[in-house]
Length: 359
Ligand SMILES: [Zn+2]
Image: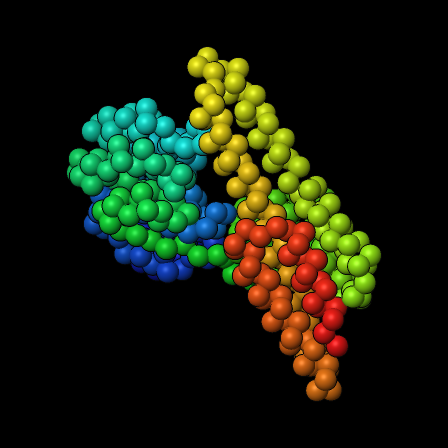
């Protein structure tokens, strides 16, 4: 990005941040913070909405001599995650370990080597428990030249104290139009971009996954066909439920495999793997798979809601409109029920029966 393509001084010093998609409120707060940054920031928001990219862009802007010009070596190295005064701490295994936390405590005391300060980014901090406690004092009062950026999906009970010591910046799901536009800019066909955006549920990471995913269109077709296939007959409903379950299995296949290889690698590592750690990793992987399945079901429900809304728009006979409304309500309730970790098959079966019975 060139500095010369804008004559506006105020946009110059935040070029790195301008490249972040969506998140206008967060970007505004971060821009305002660049001239006198505090010692710690906590970026809070769901997975896949761009927290880490925003952290790299903000770090680059803090390391740059010109508040994030986007073109100097500080900016380039920091955006690539290889700046000498930038430390990015990712979890190993299920969380940031206490050893890694101790290492961070030591690193935080270090003086910057090439920039005016150093930045330490802590990823997936909602998963850190003991590490959060070990880091509290350092995050609370680091040396003046150290800035922390803590990334978390939520403020869990063990993060309340750490959160209270940070400037909290909220990140939100990215708007569908922004995701669609991003895909079109990258050369994705408009119709496919629209469908992926609809199914991404505000997550850029999910949009990228769907783009790579050959089973996306057939999976979407299953949901698309439901209004026409639906009948209050056991065999019809079971057929639809099986189709959905099979499509979800394909979707999480690679996650299941990744989980297995992660465990195998840890098991053959020098320290081996304790039963306690194995259980922790297995549970974390299960949660991850569950989240993907739940997101996919929610996207499917949204797809159905969308098609019933279209019915409402195109049909002015009061009976039809009323039926569509009732179906929308059922789907919205089912979508909420997904947050309570229900049995997938039971939920889908009863939802489809109820949808079919309304007439
Ligand atoms: Zn720069």
